[in-house]
Length: 125
Image (tube, rainbow, N blue to C red; front, side, top):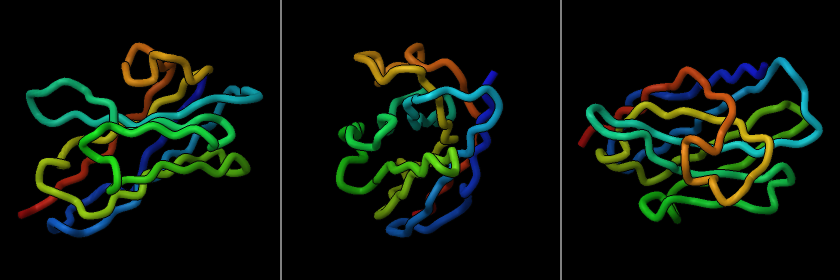
């Protein structure tokens, strides 16, 4: 079992920045991919970004490309999501997710094996 704990959410004005963190613990794997998803009230959980074990491959939703950046520190078992130029439509609960392999399903929730509890991000206009 892998435990994921997100942190760094909060309230920010439009145009501001936040950095989310997600720390993994529990069962160890030699390599794994990580992703970020978000869910606004009344909406489905949407893909935001994903990163391979080495960090050499990163993927983003079109809605956040150029504004968000995913990164990881494998020594700390932590993945980050730097969010810049935030917009009110970025308001959502943000979830990090763990995948044994970063396959073609990286944009879909079913492609991930473990999930964090989520952290709220609210962007005011």
